[in-house]
Amino acid sequence: MRNLKYIKTAAASLAAFALAGAAPAFAAVDSETAYVLNTFSFLVNGALVMWMAAGFAMLESGLVRSKNTATICLKNIALYSVAGLTFYLVGYNLMYMDVTGFIGSFSPFWGPDDAEALAGTFADGGYSASSDWFFQMVFVATAASIVSGTLAERIKLWSFLAFVVLLTAIIYPIQGSWVWGGGWLAELGFSDYAGSTLVHSVGGWAALTGAIILGARKGKYTADGKVNPIPGANLPLATLGTFILWLGWFGFNGGSVLALGSAASAIEMANVFANTNMAAAGGVLAAMIVTQIIYKKVDLTLALNGAIGGLVSITAEPADPTIGMAIIIGAIGGAIVVFAVPLLDKLKIDDVVGAIPAHLFCGIWGTLAVAISDPDATFVTQLTGIVAIGAFVLVLSSIFWLILKYTMGIRASEEDEVGGLDKAELGLEAYPEFGQGSQSF
Figure 1 (tube, rainbow, N blue to C red):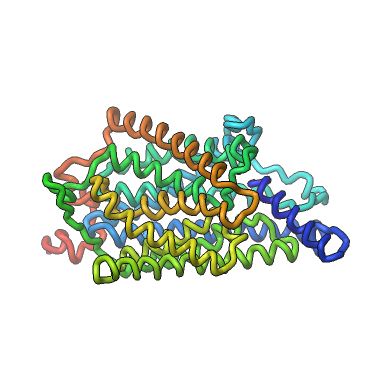
Figure 2: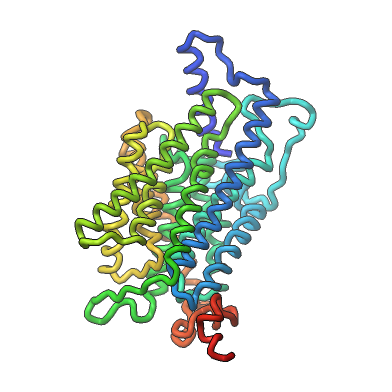
């Protein structure tokens, strides 16, 4: 229920009608039809965002070694489930209900209230309460998925899921209330259309703190600073995952129009789809060109993350830019990914799937880029939001990771890491006919 964004969209619609000399009207259809269309938009676009969970699972499965594939699959379906439970128990109310500037309500158990609609009264711009909850919930899981990929191959399953509970129940909804819940950053004028900062950078900051505290995989870095590449097991699977994410992003950004009950809303959603698509294309091509120039070869994994970097970059404002500007914003995101990956390696920060460059660094860039296309946004205000949310997530994530480290432990044993977390955590292999299991027959 990002009401501020919806009000902005509605105001723009009214202004367009007024300029055209038409009688001001919120929608060209009656209020009940608009209610149905708005609800339909939330449900369909929310389903597309949910499908991004499959994209993350396939991308990460392709970029880890085969001995850790089943574990990463389990983590992705588990984190999605955990996110749904925490958002029902506390997250939604904490993010959207009775926000007083810095935090919402701690009242447990969200429940829908559609009494007015069931009685035949439909407010302008209305929609089913559960459709809104569902659309907001699928966003939470995206932030947690970012952490999963970065920390793959060496973190304990239950420790990771414990952090997911804290991320989705506390960190994500509190900072989300500052903007989408109408809190202090919204009042300041900070703008983040679909979550370059509120979703992607939040996941990136949490992943960064976890990677630093957890440490790198065994053998990734040598004592003299040399980087040993650890290739993923299935690049076709990683490519499929990227395409799924690209598809899901149309729901991620398109659904954030928050309306489909007027021509103006439909036009805005179409613009968002087009800009989202072309920003990703720009990210892919920029990553390919930069890697060709620097390394004399094109790197598939960087091209895949270039697409994601472009998508993250445009997410903060996919409606206002022209298609040409969207391509440029996405291309800069793709280039950022190429330069950020070796930077993390120099700092000995092991990010298995390249999630920190694509989601954190590109999330920062995309949020700053809002000031280029949105006349109501300023670089100072956008930077203020980036720093405030970044500091909040860094501090709380560090505290939570350290608590987990010194209580239940977060790092798998060296023996388990070498043998693979599939056998250690799950007692099975993702590809038994090609792994050690095949040798027992």
